[in-house]
Image (tube, rainbow, N blue to C red):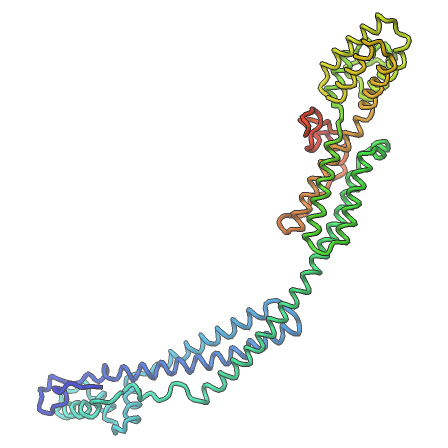
Length: 434
């Protein structure tokens, strides 16, 4: 430390004195920082051993927060030790004694500090003497070594042991994750397979025995059964998602091939052919416009059988009526069959006309089964979409179908527009009541 010559001259003015407290501040700072470092190392040593305890316990009992707890213990120990060291920051008197001892100043700094407020000649001479003695000395070196061997060795040993235990803990955590991931994925796929089995059973609710035996419903059951077996045999969630997507495409194709005749088309047909269907169904007491699809199918079959007994003029009139009915109906399949029957009768081909009428009757008789299968296909596609979200971890479990909902799907009319532009072929859920 370089002291001004005016402060070292014994004949200088008494008003020019060395500021002892300011002069000792580097000494106090050096000693204080040394204590902070020592406290931090001591705290880290303790925290590291606590963290090692967490890691060992996590290796034995396998709990997931062992590594974060161990790191937190080491960091908190380091911070707590540093804070403790900061509370032991030295005062000016302690710094003066340390400098006196280190530079063999015979308590000159300590005495000058004690006399700094005195105006006596002795205090002035003491201040000048101290200024002369410390001129050129590096007082900050008086703190000694910041890190002694007895402080560094335990901290180094704790750091090495903590690093080894942390490596073991991380390796154990990765192993547990690698083991748990396939098990979790397998449980999810088995749960999905069980869900598909439950879905098949729920889709059967509300169906009549005839509807259960319909080709469309049986095809839907077969597709879902295949999906269930695929889910049980898949080795990854990605493969399970691919299987569900493929099944959804099959269900969609199945729905596109269904053409149920809705109530409006049946009413239009009954209204257009009321004269002819009324004669063949004279037993019914209900108006022809409200006749069910099954009753209308029976009437068309009866009409097809009676074509051979009609006169040419009656066939011509029936051909015109069938053409008007074809133009009035909203169902494409029914319109095509009626037009073929009308054309055959106009060309005096009653046998071909009877075949076309029987096709129209078959469309009507299978309409209820087709509508039931269509609404089941829509419900299955919706449930499979929810199941995909569940497996992918982006959604909740698919909602289950209640018995009332199942019955509602069976009796739901095909409202809306279908995929091929045909009325009554909607792929949405039916609007029937349970």
